[in-house]
Amino acid sequence: MILSDFIELNPRVSLPRDSQVPFVSMDVIAPGTRWVYPAQERAATGSGSKFAPGDTLFARITPCLENGKIAQYAGDRPGMGSTEFFVLRAREGVSDPGFVYYFSQSRDLRSAAEKSMSGASGRQRAVISSLSEFECDLPPLPIQRRIAGILSAYDELIENSQRRIKILESMARALYREWFVHFLFPGHENHPRVASALGEIPNGWKVRTLAELCSRMESGGTPRRNKGEYWEGGEIDWYKTGELWDGFLFGSQEQITVRGQRESTARLFEPGTILMAIYGSPTVGRMGILTRAASCNQAALGLVANIKLISQTYLYFVLFSLREHFNSLAQGAAQQNISKEKVASALAILPTRDILEQFDRKAEPIFLQIQTLQRQVQNLRRTRDLLLPRLLSGQINVEAP
Image (cartoon, rainbow, N blue to C red; front, side, top):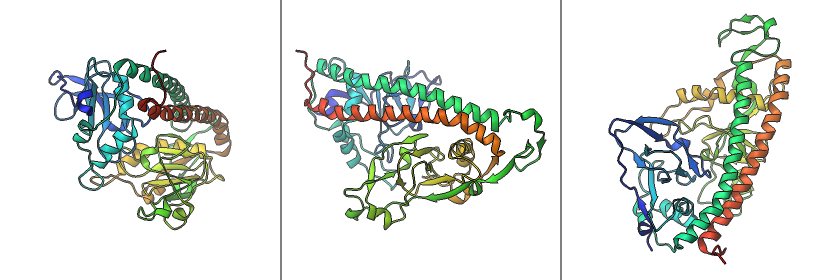
């Protein structure tokens, strides 16, 4: 059948005029995460996609579509969101909402949407007919529900781990704020405040630029796309900014060859390097920590702490605390960005060595727990994604005996 016989595309949803309704923006969708929860409410006026609980939101604009920004809406009442979503809804008695979400993740469907893209460079959009006219073989409703149930078990484990990660992240950020924003660090009573370029800070502390706090700060690059030997059989991870999501990086969507890295501006960064997005506000400032050597595109900076002054853990929190500042400086029309020079000139606090060492002793074990949990999530996603095409194609039999 064609997909429009199986699902409703952009179904009609009535929202109370001028009422406040849940709103889902593109930036809150995390690739590879099934559920998206509304992070805010807005007045039900103007343009935008409209959807009901259980509907699937499918990004139609570059690079969000290529990055896999597809999620199932988990709100408890109808809402609206970005104009850049296609909305997919199960047809009663024909399709299962969970199966619709998992089918929307299939490589063939996403590829069809990507091939239909047109428009100005950097703002290309897929056309709705790429989905509505997509031809596919689909199982009966009971089989759909079994497939969705199998894959849902993985997503429940993923969601549980992500909840634990958020708790740990909150703990680490709260510790940083208490010590280095509110200055309630151990022994703070014995440190009078003195004037600085960032206001009053504890005596003995200093203000430094990020350029002074980093031993390396370089942007990435993109090997030429028409050079097959730069991409085919590549073994070096190459990250795009859409893959940076404030966590550890275990593997990129694309890889480049050693020759591609050496003969282009795609610099190689060592494990532990922080990659930070400098293009695409509000993506500006989002980060990923490398767990193995890798490269990135020119829309990201690789940053390494000057270990004579600070640790890489402390640098991560400094960059996180500067995110709003970086976004306020971002310029540009279609693609807002911040220059490397502005990042380098940003000011940050440099505490005394003993306070930094105490902070690291508390923060680094939390980071290790986060890394372990994120690796578990990565493995669960990999297993789920390997199962997905086999279940959809019928290679794995799920019919009841």
